Length: 525
Image (tube, rainbow, N blue to C red; front, side, top):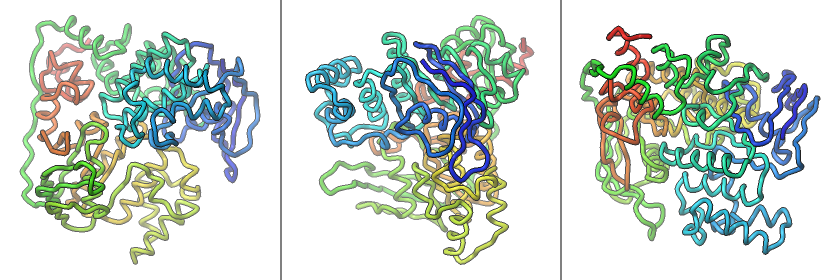
């Protein structure tokens, strides 16, 4: 389906190539996952395979796509791909642009709507759909054109855990039942390894490793690039020595651990944290709607967050999490209730492009500090070094990869020196090393008394760095608590590590905790 030989690509205005001597064959009907650190060239390679989205630059080498079929592409942000106001029109749009006969378009739309189970959506406005529904619509609209090759760029990054599982289930169905060739870029590999035939790892613009999913742990010992993308559940398996016949799903892992350790049962010790009484953010009985006649997004909502605390808010797409951050930042005002924020607040929005105003990242940072009246070159250097983006300062922010843009936008927030830091999906597009670096930054900010409020679907990140977690549903906070109490009380909104090990380690929520529990019991294999 895809043949690439010695492909090198350099963006206009850049001296170093983004891709260097890539050689790769994708047989028809395979499902391949493309992993690697942020900025390693994954999205560049994906876009070169879709000529309409190919970036500007110079290239050499050979790139061929077999069968001259339509190439489908699903982006990371669901809203970036929807172009019409009605679901039925979105499904017909691509076929109309390709000049397909009207009768054929209508037949395909009917088939796809039935296949995806979205018949009831057809008359809906696209803006009424949740994030998960929008991404399913994007996939369905692509499938109307009967692609032979389907490219996906972190399609679940903006989805809540349940919506992500539903999306991946549809991918499995498309691959197995329709034989579509799939190439998917992904940082969080836990959910996709069981679907794939092959894992490709990129590093510095090259294919660093190519292997079967079941060989992940063995390959991680041989290649540092593979170890850098090792899923957190596999870190648990590595601790237990389960290298051969490694489980690929939560169910397989849970069954294996119960079989190996049938008589083991206990808990990890959870240290008590001193109570913080310095209120930094207070929301009391707030109700908010975007239009006078629209339903409330938040209803009689209350929340208190303290100085030096990291509060993680989770919940489904479209339940009001991002709306709350807008209220806290002052971008929106409630029609009832009050919002009090002690000190200056800085907000990282879901779309990091929104914060950039200059042609270079360096210029953007400089202009921002001058606007604040405290320009300091050292501050820029320190923040860039802290985030690992010093080499990107001369680049245009829009030319950066998704993960690099995320880090660059966070850098701008940190330059403000806020007392309250509001983060909306800050880990999307970030590799494991970058997520860990973000966690360390949050720890450092907490030590200086900064209040961090984080909206995310990344439950693993919450379990490691949150002081408290809250669950937002139907416009209200329906549950909150310390991470161990919070996640062990949930069945669906919990970590993969807890779902795997909960029969043996009742309250373990991270791979490190559960692995340490097994080590203490002397059962390392």
